[in-house]
Structure formats: C-alpha cells, structure tokens
Image (tube, rainbow, N blue to C red; front, side, top):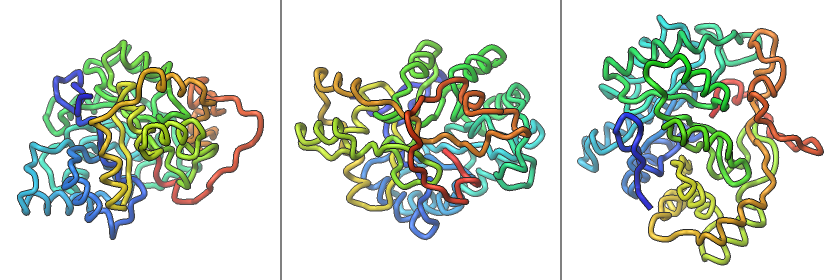
Length: 331
C-alpha cells in the first residue's frame, strides 16, 4: 500500500495525516511532535480548530530540532467561514501562514459550503448564503500565487462538487469529508475518483464523543470488532486500513502517544478481499449532520438541501452529543 497519493497537481499527499481538531492547545504541540517522530508527514489544521498557533509552534520546534525539514511535511489549512468574500480570502491565508509560521501551505480548503458574516462567530443568526464561484475564484488566485500549492474543498456533496467543477478553471485537488465504515460515501468516492479529485477522510474513526455527532460508534461496530479480532489489530487500525484500501487518505487524531503510533501502523499488512466485503453489511449513518446550518439565512431549508439528498433515513432519533463549541468549529 502506497504511503502517499498523487494529487491532480502532481504533488504527493501522505496517505495518513494527523488531525488536530479538538486537541487542546496545551497538548497539541507535544502531540504533533510525537506524531512526526512516529512517521506522520501530513498535518491537518484549520483556524476553526482554535489551536493553529500551537500547530505553528510545533512545526517550528520540529524544524529547529532537525527532526524534519519544511519540504518533508504536507501541511493543510482551511478557509474560515467568515472570510468567504473574495477580498477576504488572501487575508485569511496570510493569517493562517502567520499562525503556522510558514511561507506556504501544501493544501488550502474551503472548510465547507457554509458562510457567516465577517468577524462573527459560527452560530445560526450569523449565517449567510454562500457564493462558491466567487470564493473559488479567489482560491484560484492563491494557487497561482504559490501561497497554496493545492486547493480544494471540505464537506462538499456530489452536487456541490459537480457545480464547482462546472465553473472552476483550477479543479479542486481534494474533497475532505466525513468518511469511515459507518458512512462510506460510495457515491461521492466514485464521483471524486472519476473526476481526479482525491477523497480525504476526516473523523475516520467516527470521532466518538465529539460535539455534533449522532449515531452509532464506528469502533464498537460488531463487524469492525470481529475483523480486528481475526487480524489481531485494534478496531481503529481496521477502520483506518479500510480507508486506505478504498483509496482515500485518512486523518486520525489523538493526543495519546500509544494510539498515535498504533494509528500509523497500518502499512505492512492488509485486510483480505473476502473480509473487505464484510464492510458492505454495515448500516450507513451520517454522523456529522451540522443541523444548525438549516436556517432561512443560510439558504438551506432542510438537511436534504445542505447535503443534496446525501442523508440517510433513520428509523429513530439517534442520541446526539450537543456542545456549544460545535457552533464555532466543524469538520
């Protein structure tokens, strides 16, 4: 299994990245340092995660200590929802580069098809309608300037990807979305593969206990557990290895050094084809619905509008983990 995927820009993106969402500011530096020492070469960040300055401090220490060079790492950041206006996009990446203490990022993503008024928090009353063509035009300028060596999107449905491709001069290199054995995104994966867009999976372990997530646990799924027992691996390793074998990069996150190492130990073994078929028996449930975005000001009148019909139909109401912090960050 390749340790990287080639993007439509020709750049190589490491197949296992280190996610930084919900890692506390006081621990993110040590977690990133441990991850890079363990072999990770892709760090996924965003201003919405509220720890990007600490990510930058970790990168500075890694470079100063000679652990890696800048060119050894693939760094992702994302456009804040309040800076979708074309005139604000360059300001946004310059702020991100200042936080990260870098001259460029390897990948810059529109964090989602969600826009809020500039200078406000991500709460329903601040929502606005998006103008993705205008925002994407500004993203293309960042790509041409070299400040972002690849550009892409996050949380885009099939229809939103198709709409973007219809107007883009520079096609998105990546679509970063929720993807794991319980929400496999088959339709979206097929579209991305057919159009040269790389699918990258955030919350590849289901992000148990995270705010805003509803539904079953990936790591306690009976099929995942059964395969872990058969192959003598952890459930997390099974979920991550499934992702790689499906052709997507995965972005696990942890602040525990043992789990950081375990989550990276997925290259020298594989899930046999007959066992891979067992994943087809898992009921599909989108865990991250972002329900607060359904609001008259956003232009989304239902979850069907937001996800363009890519919403599962559940028999009952799943238990949700509610938390006000989720209104300030997503992905």
